[in-house]
Structure formats: C-alpha cells, structure tokens
Image (cartoon, rainbow, N blue to C red):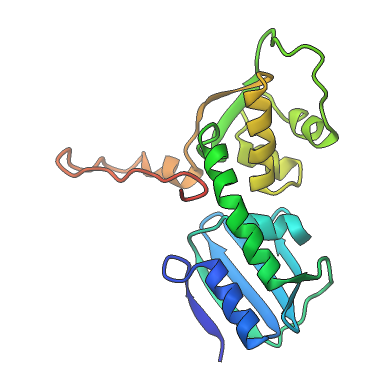
Length: 208
C-alpha cells in the first residue's frame, strides 16, 4: 500500500528519514500548485530526482524547498536513470544547512515572482561574471520574473534565485517589483471580498 499525505502535515525531510530507516526502494512523488517532482530510492540511497525544470542534485535542492503539496510513496518503482548516488542522511544534513541560506535569499528575493532588470550605469568595476550568471542574464528584459527566467534557462528555481541574489547584492541587477502568479491574477476578475474580511498574506517562496 502506497504512503500518501500532505507536506503541510509531513515534511520532506521526515519522509526521507522514514525511507532511510525502512531501507525502502521506490519513488516519492510530490505534486503541488506550480510544481511537480519525484525522488527515487534504492537500498537506502537516493539515486535520481527530477522536477519540471531540473534533474539530479539540482532537482533535489529544489524539492527540499517545497513546503506545500501532496505526496505519494510508491514502493518498488524503479528510476528511469541514475543521476546521483547519495546516502539519505547526507541529503537531510544538507537540507538543514540550507535553511540559513534560504532566509538570506528571501531578504532580497522574496519570491520567484519578482521581476528583475539591469541597473543603469552600475558601479561594479571589473566584475567577473560566471557562465551560469551569463546564462540567466541573457533572459533578463525587465518584464520576466525569476520563475520565468529559470524555466527559460532550464534551471531550478532555487538555484536561479540564489544566482540573482548575488547579482542584486553586487549592484548589477535590481528588483523591479513582484508579479502575482497567473492563478491569482485571474482571481482579480472575480467580485472583491467584503472589506470587513481580512485578506490572507501570501508567504514567500521558501516558506520562512
């Protein structure tokens, strides 16, 4: 029987610990609003992961940032390929190390729905730009969100946000504003709620 549930009740790291303790083989499938991914396990090792935009370790890093969505563990389902070979405890430890990093990123990049643009006449001197930075910068046009740029560059959203954090803090790129997801934009066409009913605040991408 497959294990099913919701990430609001059961964190991904807890699921990884369970798979590790039971030494399970199979696939952990996660599906939420705007994201979908799967992690494959074999003999207590994590051997493959993929999302809509990435595979391997970058996909694992992306999935570990998810705090909402439904999950299902399917025992015995085999991976279509092997992209990593990581002990689950190592993955959990790395997830713990990234918590501070996520908080740091969100102080500048509150979500992947922010629109970024180049800074006019940046005072950056002889800055050295890495290949992954050039790749993302090639899609910056002042209208695209980080989410859209990540998809166009075939890069995980977390990694893209991390790169743009560096570009913004270096003074090369600026945050223009935040554009609501399409689903929320369509809700604006519906009648407004009574003014006495408070609206819920939307949380940041990483949930912290």
